[in-house]
Length: 489
Image (cartoon, rainbow, N blue to C red):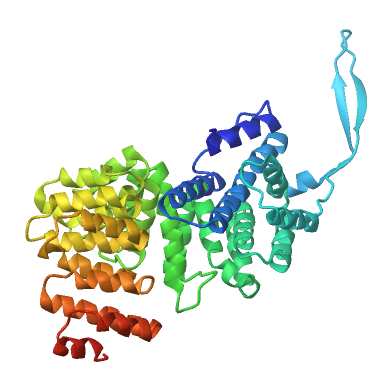
């Protein structure tokens, strides 16, 4: 099956056969497109989403994809002319002089026709998007891309009109959020400060849908001009020139600027990013420096060479900072690559790997619990086995309790599983209280067994007291044990 990027490339070539589809990851729309595509694949394969959630993800991809296609279509036709240039090309008289063979000068006046750019019906465009959304158009539908691509060619005035119309008429939350962010990202391509000012002036009308908009603008701006975003951050910190923040949340605006700036620099110039990281206040891992580190990791972890370079750089970092960067890289990396991140950790000296194995396996358990379980049990010492079993079951049960229970039953049955049995019964009690009670009954340690039974009974009795009491009456417990289990907290 054709992959999604190949589909867009083919579509672009059909629309503009003479224009190659140059898409660089520093371009915000393309970056967001890649990110959403990665997340949609990841979520689709890693979580059992229902049809509606998958549809919402694909619809967001459609919008971003359309903006990419529309932008390059506009670039090929107008080479990104200004709004004034695009709006009116007035009648112009040109005086063109020619030099005949006899050396005499002659002049020929040529009058060009008048071309006026037809104003787009923005309300109709938004209405078309709204109608198509009801039809559940998907990325691979060229008509859905065609419908939304027209927004990428709008003038600044028309983009603001489209924003107002979106706020007013689109009610579906996912579509509204995505379209608002895409429109503001389009404004930010040429006027990022103007886009931020728009958000600041429309906070009341944008409401919750505007919460992610500053991040979209910062991402676009940082991808196009990271030095300007660095200067913007310096002004925020030194002069207090905040556009969006009150006195109580100024750190949020700085964090947005830094995280997107360092993400963009990580993709384009890692050495420069590390140099500027060194300019931030040392040890401020809960503030500006921490935001920069998070952005840097996001921009680097997916690329093998950049990830290796950043991991190598952490070896020379003092204190906890290097460990923090490694941990964040591994969390992302392990989620995207079965086992590779964990294998990298295991190849480290034991004193280094001990603190990194947890974030790596935690992410791996979210994607491939079977593989994560194998690694955790394999590396555990005899003393660590009870905790390892409990960790596997707790994380796996959140994703797939049936598979977790089946795996637990396949392990050597002994007291080392007691902690895992209790964790598992706690994990499933609300969805399957009868099964949770059955698991609690299998615990070998008498004290742990009564504690687990009591925990299940107390929650089950709130859901169905009759069923909980009937099950407890048939349990092989002493009188004192019955009393302990029934005593409320």
